[in-house]
Length: 79
Image 1 (tube, rainbow, N blue to C red):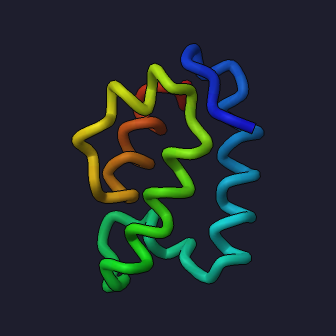
Image 2: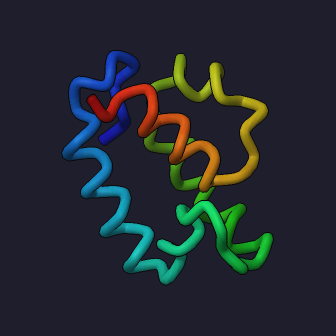
């Protein structure tokens, strides 16, 4: 399920994303300070972008680090 542009499904979306990234062995890519490989960061970034609304994808087009995208979405929707 994609994260809705208004963030109404943010809480359930974060749980699903964390579970999927954990199953892929790349959950640490969401931490601000991490030593993950560029390949793992790319995998996480691709996964996140596939699971956000197209408007959000366009808005965060220049965000290439999954930890920054995760932080930005949390600041925007986690109220």
